[in-house]
Image (cartoon, rainbow, N blue to C red; front, side, top):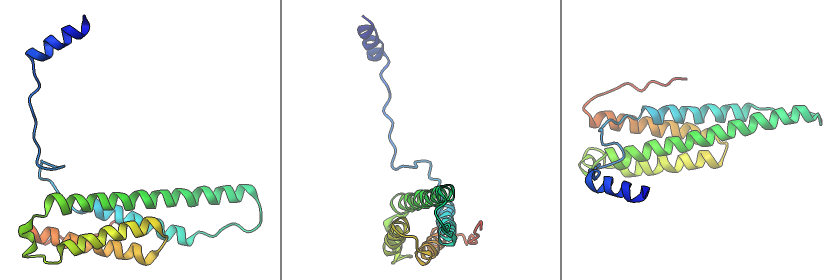
Length: 157
């Protein structure tokens, strides 16, 4: 009985169809979120490389070390994934074929940046983390130039 009543209501009040051209139909794009995430990758990488394992076999010291180490790794990997996600949205949703005239290296720049995100997840490598931030900076400049603006590159750290 309830099913037939709901069916009758839905037949009389059908849902309207909604269409969107991309993930962000609002048209609001900004590489700032990729920058913040990439900065977190750099920060976590520095923290991981600065960690010193405890000497001796004190279980509590090792537990604290392992806990901190695993938390830093988890954050680094999460932020590298977030960086990649934000870059892919810019690459696939914001930039259009007409941007290639101004930025002939656009696809290569984004492809290499996405690969750096993966490298930062797989390794604890300060060089790769720094390269990632530089790649995000290059994308920042491309993005703002495509909008006819020259927004300054400013990092939070």
